[in-house]
Amino acid sequence: MLSDQLKITLPTTDELPCSDDTPVDNVDRRAGRSQDQNFLPNLLLFLLNSIWANRMDWFFGVDMGVYHTTGVSPKVPVVPDGFLSLGVERKKGGKSRKSYAIWEENQVVPKLTLEMVSHTPGGEYDEKLEIYRKLGVLYYVIYNPEFWRRDQQQPFEVYKLIGENYQQQIGEPYWMPEVGLGIGRCNTVFGGIQQEILAWYDEHGKRYLTSEEQVQQERQRGEQLAQHLRSLGIDPDNLPTT
Image (tube, rainbow, N blue to C red):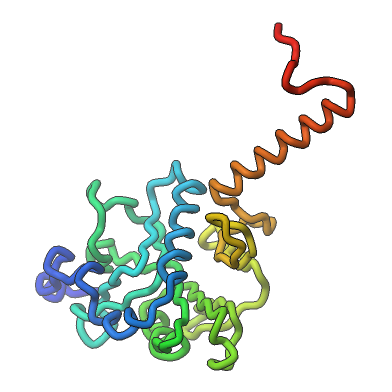
């Protein structure tokens, strides 16, 4: 619990560097960021905008500084590739956030953080893990599709904070009851390209589709219906009207 004196001395988010100003934590690793490190967290955000369209009590940040008081200085952020907080406004005071300061969010710590490993290691398996452990982040996801052999890890790992330490979890997609979502990998066509993406899942392991996939699915259903009608001798392009 912060003392009243400490609260007074803490800077506001308007006084802190935002993601556009390249937070301290992120300076070195930005040069080694891959295209997917921008694309995949944003895809998770876009999916949440659809899945939780009617909920106003969550926020998903992408490459945004998280300022906290458990490190060397409240002015030095940790910058996840993506993070999810629950019980906060989607837009704070109706405005977009420049950064996420724990002390301005009623002490709400992200429930989940995501780190994607690039060819330049960024301390995902040690330094970042320790920061998130001390901060109290419940779920820590590390996605390492290219360099997992180099790092002697797995391509996709989920850690859960149990007690005071992280324990690696088993199963994919992995269901997170405290979040109300599962997370995992899948192969799909997105933007005309076959690729592996990260996705959200429901409690039954069913993946939430992207808008592009939903359109394609409806198109396929329409084509199947048309084929069925033709097999019955009915022209789907000249159906009788009432």
